[in-house]
Length: 360
Image (cartoon, rainbow, N blue to C red; front, side, top):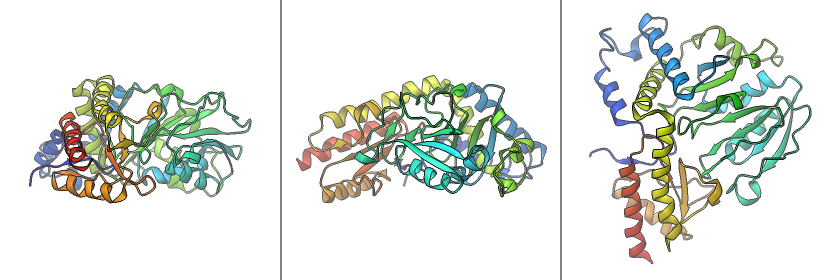
């Protein structure tokens, strides 16, 4: 069997070119006589891998010098605790809840201080992004938290909230490197890499230097202090070395594609293929509010659970994998991250048309 079109929400599709390169280097990385999987994280070879990865990421995102880049473990979910442990200096934070992950982050933060949910779209099953231009931002809030792209619900903040001067913290796991960002508008941008950048096991945290201090909540473990990792340049303990190596290759691949502006253009073109079809389909319909649609995750339904299941089954037979939607939305979801080629999206739309003709 050849390569399938993999629409998984994460771990997700990686660029084929990157996988082939990694395969070529599996037994002997750069003349070292060993795989990156086997080499010491203290070796010169790995030092060069992690430093090059950071420098390429800084270039791609135009990260200012006063922001640190940390390659950490524990996934995005560990950041749900690490953020309040490090940033809740006055014991309060504001959360904008636009999906399961922001909801879980808010629940976790409650263990460490007061959490004010200042906006939410839970009233309509998170199918839209609330207006965040004039929110009741708390005076004593240490930060305002968002999940920028909601993988499950297929929504995305097209405009960042007005935090009224408070530090913005954003989980960008599922839109990481999909379009240009103005890093200066955030205090912290972080994301698990397994959706758009690399294999599961790495989380990248981009954090403004002044937010990294020794003043953390009492009882914060050494491993959960940003300062620990900043001081050790992400090498306090053994990092997920092979994962970082693949991320580095993806950064190089993105530079070769023309950087984040080119990726945004390509991602818009791919998403349009699917959304344009959904908007005129008599069988399928998208579940996210049009103005808030994500370029990365496209949930859709037929309105009939049995037909949805049939579609997923037939699609799998035709080589389209991982299209089943998350249980909280039902139906289907196509995740069309950076590495999903436009041909894959075209082929899916054509398959959907055919299915529609046979079932309407």
